Length: 147
Image (cartoon, rainbow, N blue to C red; front, side, top):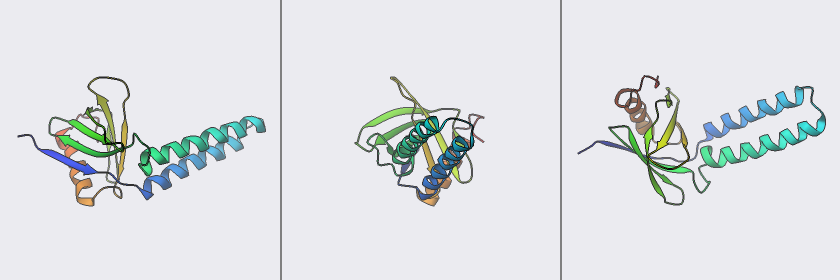
């Protein structure tokens, strides 16, 4: 029987703050650049819309297709459930990243389009589960790209 690691993903204040800060820096850079005001306004609108989408998808997990539950198997395959209840199977890509405070899972579908990314911080999963996830990704799925 294969071992599995199950995670329920909740909202993350840390990730919301990081996303807001990064988008704020992008706005500041846009307005500091020598572009016409009309282009700066249009760019600001695009950045604001992207921030809203990123918060719903990754930080708050309130978007319909946001992944809210993961089951990782020892062969580095994963099953993920979206907010609407749809389960799909994936492989954890070697381009995934894990650190002490953040894990970014790049998932590859067995078939079909779309390569979802799951951003996990220490405050949107149980702390013990987050530690297990970090160990799991480094030692069981140690693709070399996970460091």
